[in-house]
Length: 451
Ligand SMILES: *Cc1c(COP(=O)(O)O)cnc(C)c1O
Image 1: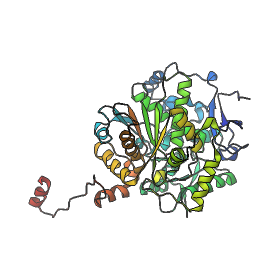
Image 2: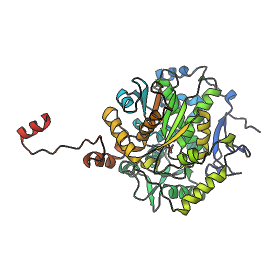
Image 3: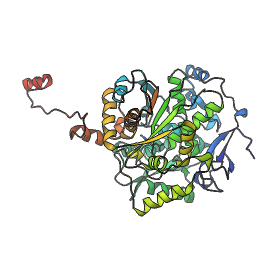
Image 4: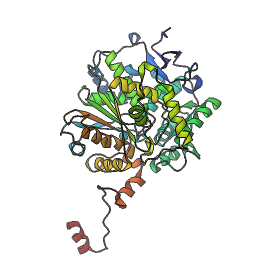
């Protein structure tokens, strides 16, 4: 029986399909019947949706209203789960889509075809802010007082910033030793209670879910389906900046797989609403040291199968990881995850977008990052996996040189300064640009500049 309001939550398992209203937060955002992931669903006939996407352009002209200025809430009709009075914004989503021919050349794309979506321009420096604007609005709607998350770094920075801007307490869980310095500095500076667990991200993720249920904290990991609603708007902004046209391909790094899941849902909804004519294809890029999705999809042939995912393949895979005491390792700390919580939603997104998955090495990531820094606005390592992955897909001929490709650069270059400094100073890669040492002598300095 379908819920009658504008929006409701629904279990993604078709054999369960339990529905809950949006105010329900039982079970830490897992289906109380079967434990599967939940979706936010809409009764579109009760919602005022635009006739065409370009109608949203009118909102920008009225941006003295903070909800119109927000790159998330400007598209609020497409994520209409809460009243305006609960909506939280601190100016997220002021991103740019940069056409970049130099990076296009590196990726063997024709000029004019490659676009970089700079999500590092968000208030806390990563795309996570899109999700937090939506999730904290939901937290206010349900009257939450305290919040928590597990994080490889950016989630904690974003949660800390949003929690205090809307008057919630927050506790963030991070793994030991593996978090980039820029991100850790943010969590502390934004006054989050920061708990560093002796373990990796997957351990933190497990602990935080139990802690949230025991203490009634509001959970902000991407298990939270309201967060993913906010992340849909990254795709709306790419379409907006392409003159309300969809690209041929979206390329995104894959960690906990919240983004890829949200993007697939966004395109599925836009198509069903008749707001786009075709759905772009999607490439999800893992690091080779944390390539669960790549392995499951390309080697174990795991598929969405209309929601009836073969759970035994996943169970066997994770049992083997446990037996081998496997811990993921990549310099791209934001995607150093081996048990991605949104795996099934991501399989659905791959189904919707005719998606592909690839894995790239840390060396490829660092080189691509240096190219994006030298020729663009820079990004953190995980973001550069997109360009490294695009190079693979060009070499294989999966993506053609004249197709339009939008790569989502998920985080800001200052997030991980240590990696950048080491790459250049220690001459770790082909694009290293170390400082030149000079004596304190004018003639010698001039000679060095001209050499
Ligand atoms: C969180 C994060 C990712 C991973 O995104 P998922 O949605 O978890 O797949 C990638 N890059 C950066 C910079 C991140 O902060």
